[in-house]
Image (cartoon, rainbow, N blue to C red; front, side, top):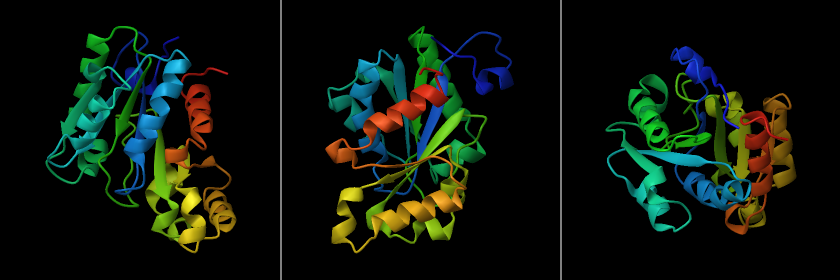
Length: 217
């Protein structure tokens, strides 16, 4: 079932369109790996989706997804930001909006478009002109003080993903305390721990997207 999104209403669209979900976070936190892990899960659930990647001057993330064999390469579009990636996901999302519109035109019936930020810093956030709902990914190896720094991305996202929890013992992180602090600074809003490479937590992330964005239970 396709949904009437906030974006469609803002754009003056009366009909249903694809829900648009952002995935942001620092470089190396596991955003592309999260998308790779989500692809087969979303496919198994019968969700019709596509992906838009953002990077400075390359299409590396898009090419990685196209070569993966997990998704039709035509369903992956790359946006070259030409500057800090947050510029085209927050300050002027025109290029991404156009990329999403093009995917909807080429794949009638598409339900979901994932927009990946190229990675920036703890302050990167998505414009609500671009996405209806967004995920912020941090990783345990980046330090257990990330929640205490209270970056806008971490605080404002709809879902916080704490990735690479399997590395906690090797980098001196108390993962239980880190998750507790993350939930505290987010006032109890959704936090999901993951080990994307090992598949841990992926079903829970897919559940959150299905329930909160596509309204499937």
